[in-house]
Length: 312
Image (cartoon, rainbow, N blue to C red; front, side, top):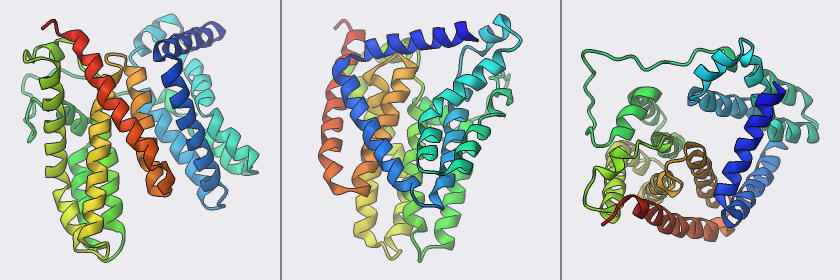
């Protein structure tokens, strides 16, 4: 276990070196801001139990996307205990913050929530002679695979049902915001290089095509939520504002995918930072300049990164 944890620590160090000191400082500032925000929220007695739930979702999401489980299974029959210790260390900031605020029971529940995760099965891709058809275009493969993994069509229908049932409340707004964040999951896994360079018109055309297709599908799927929110007490102005925010989040998520392409860990860290930076202005208006700066940085960095893969 000691050798495994040292290996993971070395990998983390290499990823930080690749990230660079400037972007690392920006990411650290975002994480510190998020930590302060979590501290304010978790001070509420009822909100403390969001810590175990958030920790479980974060660990389970990371566990499902691991690609080294086959190697670890060969390396040692006790590898799941290695993962258990690693996941507990992942949640050190959350349960440490809960302990500092005096929420001992919630801190213990946060640690206990990760206990079953290493022992849960991970769905394996199984080849089928007859593939299921999708309502989405095959070119938008992120949406096709992401929707199948998440069961997003069920979430979409459930969201419409909840928004119709509670149209006179804030539920339509919550559903539209949640759907915007759910869509970002589709862009957490970078595709193989051949699927990028096969688009022969160059980096700029590929970048524009990706953004246009992603935003078009987002607007199409978010349209029912927008209409239901517009007819709610939030009014059409509030619905338009939240829809524009959702478009911003989705576009930043798409650009974040190519900012550190093809490194999956750095891509997911960037997209996690994107979600945090996008949420902060909703809680406090002074954070809006940070969102503008992050958007401009993603535009430049994602286009610059993609240019390396074309020789035109």
